Every structure is written in structure tokens, then in C-alpha cells.
Length: 101
Image (cartoon, one colour):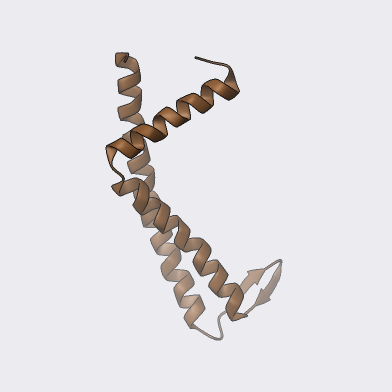
């Protein structure tokens, strides 16, 4: 394998771990805020431009925000082997759709 590809793969791994760390930090803060909204029966969030305090809508928002934390934890603590496979997948999709080798 070319040295430039190995450097790109290492940069990709570091970038994914850095992005995962930020997903955990920002997603954790958002999760904490939405958990407070969910537990407070008088708190309202805006849904389709209308303020509402419906419990199911607040729960759906909490679930949506928790996916950021889960994805961040995955990318932060994923093994190098998995991230290398993602890099190879990225490069193959790039060559398939961008017509580059």
C-alpha cells in the first residue's frame, strides 16, 4: 500500500476519533438539557412551530439526541481495524461515484 494512503488512513482515524469526541461532548450537553425538559411536566418545546409540552414529543427529542452520544462513543472508542474498514469503504464509494481511482 502506498505511503500516502497509509497517512490518509491514519488522518481519517484521528479525524473520526476527534469528531466522535465532539459528538459525545455536544450530544451529552444536549442530552442533559432534553432530559431536564422531559422530566419537567411544565416545560415546553417547539414542534412544527407550535410550543407543546406533550410527553411523547419530548421523549422522541430525547431519543434523537441520544443517537449523537451513541455515535460519538462508537467513533471515539472504535478499534483501528473498524475505522480502517470504514476508510476503505469511503475510498471505494468515492471511486465508484466520483469516477476516481
